[in-house]
Length: 208
Image (tube, rainbow, N blue to C red):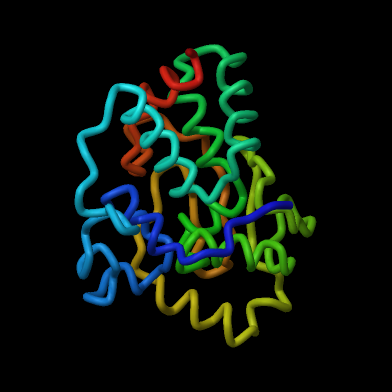
């Protein structure tokens, strides 16, 4: 599977906003946006205003980068969202939010979505009692997610849980912090999705 291996801070600078791709570092003065808020490259400080297409493209790229999804898979999600009943843009965000790596991050079981993908790949989590090591696995309402009993003694997992203990959990997830189990109560409504994405621009981009 293809994946981006370059400097992720360049992504934030290109989009002109924090995408929170490096966990705790994004909240410190070391964040690239804090130090250099312009786009990377020789002409980064001289970029002109975006066209309508440019705004749509940037909205799509920002969403992909927030969730850490490659173009082919993101387009596949859009086609899935288009076939579902309801608002296409909201459906798209629900699909992205229901990915296992995103849920692990949202629960505070990882410091970033990139770390969540790595931990999922290493097999630290169970879905409905069975090990799932596919970060893109889509959860459904009623599914339960938990940390493997063996993994709970891991120094890495303990450090992550301690660092993110105070992270608020959205209402569509029911977390039991003592048993380290969580249930997907329902897929999120639009107002419950806090990721700053302009989904209508993404729909316009793919609908051309």
